[in-house]
Image (cartoon, rainbow, N blue to C red; front, side):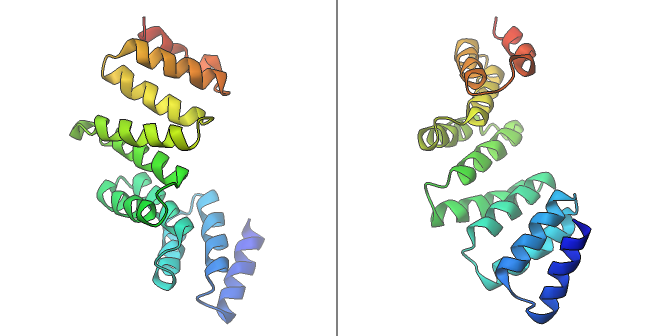
Length: 168
C-alpha cells in the first residue's frame, strides 16, 4: 500500500486534478485507515466532478464514520438524485437512518431498505439491517423472517444467534 500511495502521489505531482488517480489514492488511504486523507481526495474529486458517484458514496461513508450524519445525508441524497437505482446509496442511506434511530427515523430507513431489497434481493446486509430495525420496533416475527433470509444468503447463523434469541 505504501508504494502504491507513493506512486499515486508522484503521479499527482504531474496531474494534480486527475480524478482516476485521486479516486485510487483515496481508496488506498481509506483501506489503510487514513480517513482524513481519503476525505481530502474525495473532496478534490468532487471539486472537479460534482457528479462523481464513487466520491459521493465514499465521502458519505466517511461522514458516517465521523458521525456527521447531516453531511452524510446530503451526499447520499445527491448520489440518489443522480442515480435513483444506486444500491449502495440506498443501503448507505438506510444504514444512516438506523444510526439516527434516536431521532425516530426507522420508518424512513425501512422505506430505503425496501427499495434496496427490490434493487438487489440477494443482499444479506439489507435483510440484516431491516431485521435489526424490526427487532427495535418489537416486530419479532418480521425480524426473525429477515434474519433467516440473511442466513440463507450467507450470513453465518452464529452471527445472528443473539438476534434470533430476542425474536422469541
